[in-house]
Image 1 (cartoon, one colour):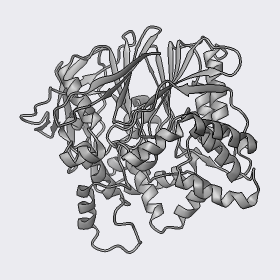
Image 2 (tube, helix red, strand yellow):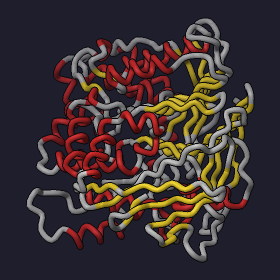
Image 3 (tube, rainbow, N blue to C red):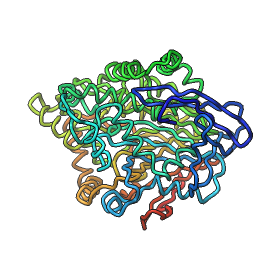
Image 4 (tube, rainbow, N blue to C red):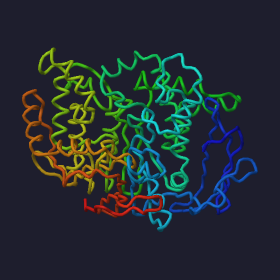
Length: 531
């Protein structure tokens, strides 16, 4: 939690357990991470929060139910809610027209009205905040705090840590969203807009950003704020105790010092030397293993032959971590990647062709226009990193065939980013598998595509574009991958939140939407599929 001044924070549970901790300070902002030990599994305990002697949570007269601390039950069924791309609008009439209904708020209303059984975990997989596409309240804040600007910082994007802090406050202070995050265990990972659109698309993109005088402050502030506001919550107490930045924060707190400089140093090092920190994280929830991958900060952006591994979406350390953890044994294995692994095949082929041409497959003269096309069309998913795509596809098939331990019932790829939702079933090009392999995409939570972009996205999934993509990849020498897949139906362009329910070897996917919109509308199941 964040407080407005240094203080002792006390959490009191309904069973009498009390946890007290002192805040730490980063760039003048004060935070507390309260660890509560000794709780039974499968518990749902209401709690109160005190700053000093003053009770500050739950808020008086809140229409939402009491917040609870939920502990996992390793023997119970598990549900994963997942989504990405959230623009806070409060479901205002103007917001509904442009961005559509807010499925994060709608999910809060749904969970407040129905009993929650078993393990329920929310995964927010990218673009929790938009640092470069601001709503009017955030623009007004920047106008107020930037009395003069001597580094050329854009007036419609956040740059400094304090601006990020306000961006998170505005995104997560909606009463319904705030209640949801206070009562449902939540995992998070960044995507590009948490830092900036097309973050780490290519080496050329990165060089162009390095030339901007405000970029170092921006990426440092963005990664530092991400660690504080999002990533620290992904860490178990054991992992947090081993985290080098956490140790520095505790040292600064004991000396009564602001840890802003330490956070800045850590964040810049994580950007400049991606191998210095691992953002990916693993969670075993009952019979479900969840691997949340960093497909942004750890990218390797070599410009030579795309097949030599110098260009990869996870970087060498990220791939090594995924290989270590992507094994058989659990009943279900989930790989969460903010950007889809399996795009509509025509788009995948376009990205693979573009990467090959950028790497010199059609000669040096074609590389520059290919790079312009890559940045203009956002060609930066797994299809645009063929080394990584082949490596992950091979690993998934090894797991699905039982070559990395007992084969799970399902191997699921969960993604967002693209602002439309779909299911793709995957199969090996040769041989068979024991596990069922599926790509599930749910996007956006609240940022629907404008109509003209929807038409372009729908066209990209058509058969003629697929045929054209096949021809282009063959003419550029792209190696055919070990997987084949197709979309089960046309993409859905409304706002959604996905859910996967696991029970023994069975798994079922749901996509919720809010067809009527409005501040009180409850989400409905748009589609449900056995996996």
